[in-house]
Length: 64
Image (cartoon, rainbow, N blue to C red; front, side, top):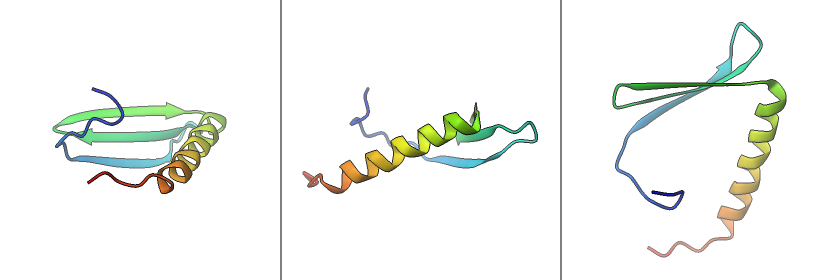
């Protein structure tokens, strides 16, 4: 399985600050809870990666 492998799994993603000054990405899927905490600096890096991926995705012509 990789980034291009589609899966039929429904998930909920929540993003927000914690009371400890971290940024939490919280994923809930099929009863599984995955909390991922990042420093604000790490969150900025992740946000930049998402922006770059969105820019690249806009240039892709879907094969469907």
